[in-house]
Image 1: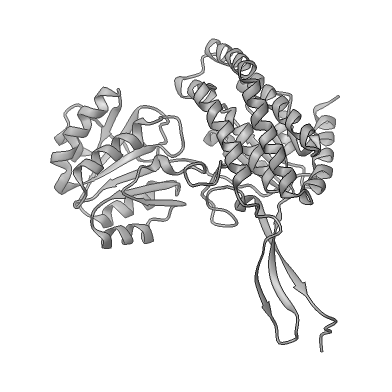
Image 2: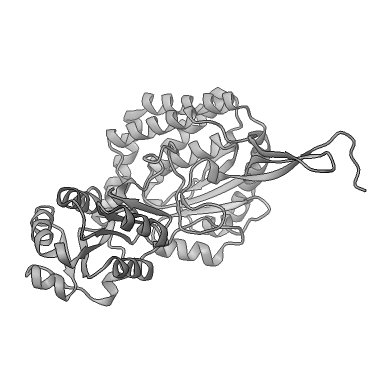
Length: 418
């Protein structure tokens, strides 16, 4: 079968399954999620063996450390997948919720009902846990989904697809509700993003190159973010202990994630005290510092930053550092160089914190917290299908509500328009 024929078949099955999913009961969807969780637990060793094959191939192909980290399925990450499935099962089902009901002078009642989007295509790289996160959220929100993981994770994703398939079969939901593309041919991606008759929305998760390509070539709506250039700003009135702990965590907790801090901004009145302490801590983690001229005055070990550094999502143990003279300068820097993903201020000044929340134009804005919290699991969404930095439909971590829409419902009792 050609790729075109294969993708047509996948799309046809997904569209049919989406109609079954739209009317599936909450109980049935929860049964499927819990059955998938149990199957993953029962097949933990098989999943790790499949992932080991992917890891070996990735190492042989020269994948860098950040990509290998994303690819690996540790026991802890398998536990997180299982917990995510169970947490999504425990969440309220948004589908069918009717809100804003009100009477009109004509006698009719008008409100809004939350409904599934339909068929969601998800394209992602490296991280096999996305297969479970995406499947769980799409199932609970009443959508069918077509998942296309990266070629580097093909063995892991097919092993997870088997777990999903068995869980769907046990619950009685259609097998085509979750389809994991079984080919690494890139033509499958081109087909998936140009099938508006079968696919209602595309969610790309991966590197900037992938997302730019999808955004440019897709013929269906795209929920996306291009970069994760996240900032932490240490204000003049920050608590030094909070500032140091958060700045270290935001950068070193994990390097290869979109909510990792890439630029640290420090107010000039605290720079002389905090920067040497932070530099010592970062050195223990092997983090390379690239600083502005004033940063380099305080830290002789820092490399002079270039204009490109402020625009760069490193996804590596590299951090750009800039000393600023005011909150205004910090906000201006973030809104100019940031990617509208996640930015945090560390301050004990309530007024400045409120200004930061109001004026920083990002999908998640934080006060006295690490940017690493910008995550669907941490936000209580159970999991996330991705982060959106768009301003229409969904913004920030996209959970259940972000995978649904609303339609108007009208209740009448024989009224006619005069």
